[in-house]
Length: 76
Image (cartoon, helix red, strand yellow):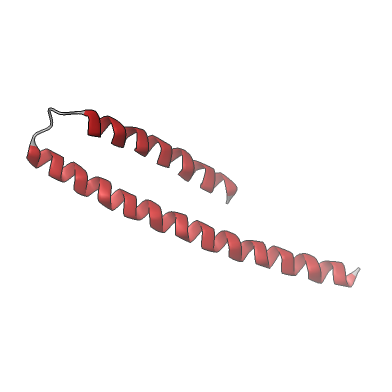
């Protein structure tokens, strides 16, 4: 789970660098710019959903681990 979160973070950084390079580029025709901006919007929404999903499941997994650890320690 931690590796997935780390990989998502690295991908997010790479996308931010591409986004910055795109913003600096001035010779892209308006039609292509609209397509690129739509793509970036969709990718941003997907990144948000993935982050939210990871945080939710990470918290859920942490609670399950604490509960099982407490249950095991209670048996000892």
